[in-house]
Image (cartoon, rainbow, N blue to C red; front, top):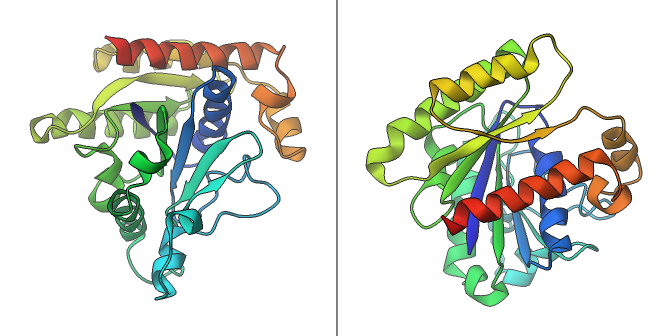
Amino acid sequence: MIKFAIYGKGGIGKSTLSSNLSAAFVKKGLKVMQIGCDPKADSTSLLCPKEKVTSVLDLVRSSKPFTLEDMVKMSESGVYCVEAGGPVPGLGCAGRGIINALESLENKGAYDYYKPDVVIYDVLGDVVCGGFTMPMRKGFAEKVYIVTSGEKMSVYAAANIAMAIENFKKRDYAKLGGIILNCRGVENELENVETLVKDFDTNISAIIPRSPLFAEAEKQGKTIVDLFPESDVCEALLGLADKIIKDFEC
């Protein structure tokens, strides 16, 4: 089973990338589960645009018994979608939702029941402590891919996440799989990310071109992979899926 997490600065496009990656793996004939680890519970909104996935934390808060089918919703494209959820704004711990979601999935035997070939954890990456490190822990994601642009604050956040992964090595947490450059068209973008890659002795797993197709696909409630299969962006996403598959073969 391929299990990896996507981290990065808030607003950098993690959820859009994760959803498109899920669609790319499905195109390759693989069974995919995407787990949104963000209090906003919107990771899978592109995959399930018509009906929001009920978050695990909402199910837990209801104090009523719930099943795997209550937690996991299949998208039209065939992706198993899960949302961790979070507390009422201003109250409680956001990381608690992630812990509850992953523990509930494990306790109810989700991985054995659905038997996904690929599990993607889409994580709010500005904070890499407490519940936000849960997807990195042993038994969950085996690798972490960090999404960044060449913008200063995005690179700064990516460096902090990479440093945290480095520090967690002794705990047998997930390893850094690589950096995904989600282009924003800023000056010296590639050079800035190449410096980051060199500092952490890793690689650029993919360069996702800046494109208006993202906005158009989101407007139609579809992924670029499904809506624009002949585009250069789709080609880059399919190439990233291939790269991740190869990373797990090593």
